[in-house]
Length: 104
Image (cartoon, rainbow, N blue to C red; front, side, top):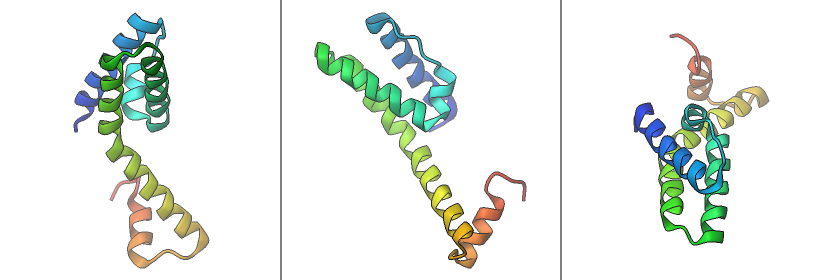
């Protein structure tokens, strides 16, 4: 999933939340920040459950699906950094940690 596709889905959720709840969101941030996206999904689902709005729930589910690979990558990165910090990292993990977020 490309970033532009994530932004498009985040924009759909933004428009739906703005129209149905009056909530203003940051579309660009929602497309790149897993925690913010998860909170917006939670908020949208709560409102959708209260109002029985299936459209809003579907958009929230779609955003959650497209953010899943980013969330998984962040979990792997965090686990690798913890292993390196604890001194229990394997050689491949140490190599991976050295290049994450840096130039090769």
